[in-house]
Length: 143
Ligand code: CA2
Image (cartoon, rainbow, N blue to C red; front, side, top):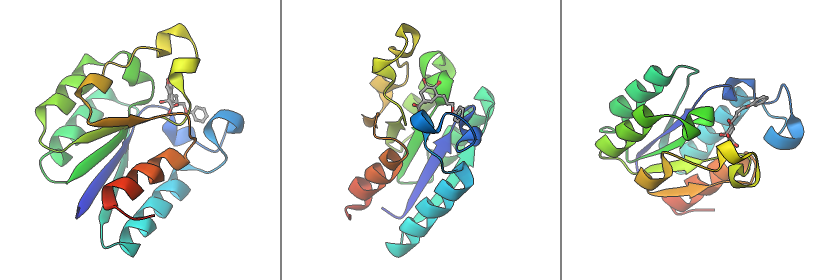
């Protein structure tokens, strides 16, 4: 595992500003810096990208999906709606892991369907923002 991309979708740029009981108190910038530093400790390059725009996430999946060894993606609200993001995940070589901070299955009914999960290699939810690093630990095979 030499290079991993972490992609975050709509509204995740607001992390740390509202609803800390659901989404934690750290900003996305702080979290991204901690993931990059964790990768550096283990000689793995971590690249991070966030967009509120569906097509930009599709572009990022296509761009990184043939370059990196794995992708972590939190598609935010697009998880439940985006055929385009699902199709992009299915089209690339890199295994893609779905990450959610909250546990959408235990929330509103409209969050109970994930269009991306069937084409992902794995998924984690409900463990707060620590879920991202938990996936990194498994992929890099360290704690
Ligand atoms: O639990 C997750 O990670 C979600 O992907 C978060 C999405 C939601 O639509 C999904 O159903 C589950 C929403 C992200 C909103 O992020 C905010 C962060 C801070 C303040 C307000 C919103």
